[in-house]
Length: 246
Image (cartoon, rainbow, N blue to C red; front, side, top):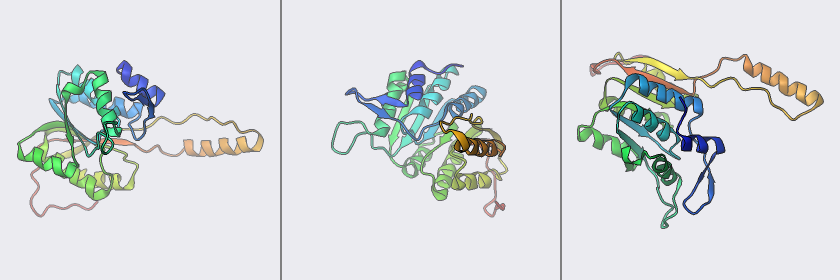
């Protein structure tokens, strides 16, 4: 299914136009394949309330909100430490441009935004009794921080809900998934694997032959998932001594 025209424009051009007319390059965002993967999960599971850790320029948020609106959901909790504005100014920083993108897509009214680190926001959500059905974890990428994010997401997530981890090629994120995939209440739901790259080179002669050889060698290697989802099948009933090797 086609994405929102504004989202497609930003994704295709790789820039967001700021309120003063400046073109700002975007970085650190999900690919088209990853965004469509998020949307497929949302269309399949139809979450009432979703949560996202790390919005940056809002590309993943726009993919998520587009699918949420299709399935009739209206609440997306977004967490990002910010800042929304450059210090002491009214100039939008990266996170602020993400919120601007959501507004331009018409999704800003769906988003409950928290400008604070996830390790501070998630416990507050748990304390207020918040429940969620979908989570996209794309915050701080150290092993301990990602595992802490999942710890709270697990407490917030309803049975049947799905957690998606981004940047799963990173050793720290892969290690977290190896651990949490052992939880009795979870199963691997799916993964987004990028398509194989096509060969493009401006080199000539022997340099082109070498470049093609390197490309051919890479093309036969197994492709690694960049985004992976796990689903909560029931209550997390592990005992206080539970442990599995990972």
